[in-house]
Image 1 (cartoon, rainbow, N blue to C red):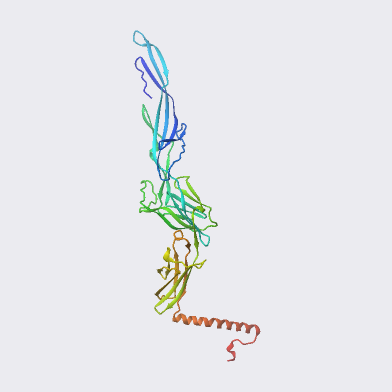
Image 2: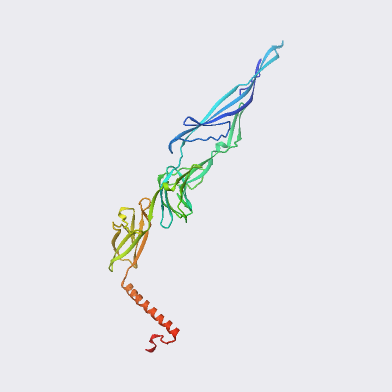
Length: 404
């Protein structure tokens, strides 16, 4: 308020009648979006046009009014000493209005998901989810998977104290409001499945990003090396039944993305059948043939034309068009093992599960043991039968060499 003027023949006295916030407005890119009444804590809803990731400007505008009482006293008569003997007063109520604004640049957040879905031969769910903006993770029938982001809340300590200014100077007071801001940061462990016995992360797709620097008074396990900010996560999960929808959680509170499972690209996953045969063997080498087929149809699996490979005793090989590969390796002790390592099912439709096989190699000692085993088993069974017959009938034919 203006200061009082109490000198002279014209005196002015000021007092405050009322003050209030008349109206608050929210403007999006300069256009009025929402209007609310007089409140220090208005709730203003809004929507953003355009595509996810576009920049927009939000402007808060508040119209504030004040009503003052102005009393003016004017001297209309004086005595001989010059003192005023008659005062006339008039009262008026001046008003003033002020509009205050504040703006912030924001990015539109509108989470959307897409990807691939499959059912493993044992009933497990295979799910690959890609998203368009940073996310928290997505839900699975018996668990969930979280991306690299976690959260902490912090406040600006400048809000702790309010400063009141007046003609008499300034005074401070503790603020009744302590606004909190939620911040996301990359966790050191990266994407995590939960629970681990139900959910397995198969692969993570993303871009290499430098880690942020947190305020000195925030103590968290922050990465120090570049990390992968995931835009896609592939998982395998146990499932009682296939889901009807896929739900992902956004970083912004309250934002979720749901999409029907039938809108995901469905990939068929088959069992594979790997058979290992010994073609030839010497004292130093052994030649084996690997036969890789679709376990359902018997169709050959050609790893030359898709991701994946066959491993024979540590040696990586590819099958040909007829699903076979023959190789000669140094003769190992015992046997030869082979396994099929299929590529990612969502990158190589149709997908396959892995399979393995092992063959034992026959050496001179093993051949003798095998011969003795083949002869000994039937002879032992015959003698055992004779023993039981002798005990039951009392023929006294046991042992067979009794009469010798």
